[in-house]
Image 1: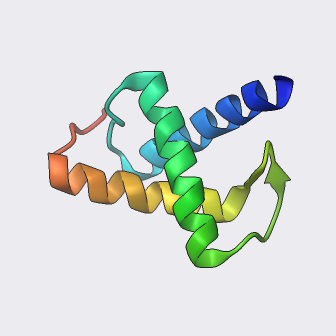
Image 2: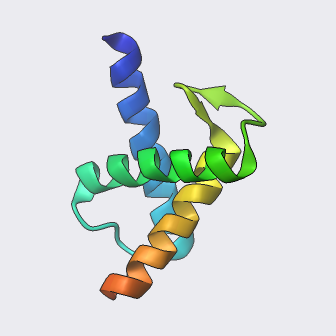
Length: 84
């Protein structure tokens, strides 16, 4: 149970950092950040493999790269709001 909570926290952080890098809000707030972190980690690890630090079951660098790509593409499709 603790590893699941740790994965949610790390997924949320990865999603939030990806949104900050892209400069767009992730729709859904904290839940959106967690979803973006999980899907971004899956995309990044599928395309780039698992390399670098592994925290909470996520390879940090591929997960972050995948989440940035996901947030950017999603914001282009949906027309995300700019942050200040």
